[in-house]
Length: 355
Length: 177
Image (cartoon, rainbow over all chains, first blue to last red; front, side):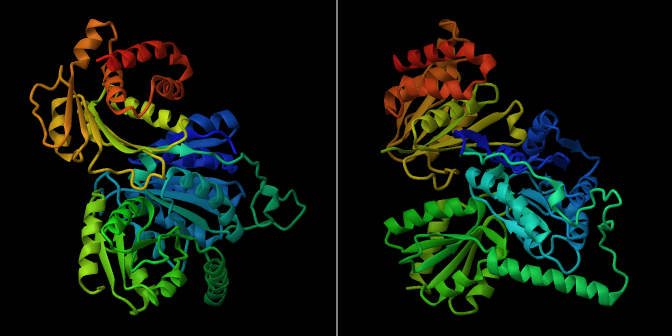
């Protein structure tokens, strides 16, 4: 590993993608993720890569489909409204079984909303990142080091399962600086991908990258095969962090930057005698259901803390399956919940249903 | 043991974010955990800028701080905005050249430093931020000059390395106050 450097989350993602062998970035500027594009713009020409500012987000995601289809490691990034524009292309990429990495540094919505941090695209990311029966792997880092590590691995995951990996961050993670140890650079060859449309020189059958299947039986078979892969992912790729759950009475569920605030709140609550702990999903899809189901047998209550009006809390409720009460606390519109607010919620739960 | 959070605030162009970066780098070089969270958005153009720096032996839990241990404020709007947020037992460092209306806050120590005037008089133009930082070092002991110098070397790009000695002079001036 290399020496530690202080970097913004957005820059760490870009450098880490380059080190993972990504040589094609297509984007369109939007706050608060513009540093990603700026970093690629500076670095890609120096290493024989492509940085291209497309005419729109829709163009950028379709360029990712093209580059990914040829076997290259390709990436795009945006923020909430820009991701909405990309959803058509994301669906096509899923329907074409093309790997790629997409990052969403969320801002407040709906509509153009604001530019301050938010997590209100959880539903979009985990339930419907595009039309049709599909999933994308959704990864939620909570610090700059994890942004670098997750990006580095996202390309491998995307290629292993031939589908998009979506990194779901927020304005805090994109903008803040923390020390980071960057991963070792690696070279990637498209020739290792027998499915890639990268030139056959009359030596093999040509590969077709396509998402149009007019025969319903064929389309159903394609979708079912994809869902078998999704089942593999749900079995193999679930990731989460537990923090002080061993003796906890109340489990907070929180992801991304919010989980950091939750940790501060847990430490304060414990000084007050409230035994709180945290389960932080690192993969939002596949969602860490089993650990929550297991904890539901032991703890008294759950509290989902999010920067939205209550989205992940639905998945927590499904996992807990009515065994214990599941509460919600959130702020939205670009406002970050404070540790004090979370402690107040914990006090309410501790004094009420959970006592 | 160190576990401290600092909000640095002032006008865009006063080196607010840079001061935070120097502190964060100094901590990193010193082997402790650090985070640097800037404000971002339209308010940075000609308006106020601020950043939050956390320095901690343990991994930094929340990089977003609503009750800082200290604030370094370099204009009136920033003082007005953040003076009430400082923890009991905390410290306020203010640039009295630019902040005329201030008063003691109960349970909080206030240090008024005419940093901008000092920078002008001592031919340390644009280095009021480093004078403020010097005073912070003196009153808190979080770092010595060697750590700050190491932090500066990391924070400053190579082609601007010739500015490091004047930055150090400004820090030393602040420490002498």
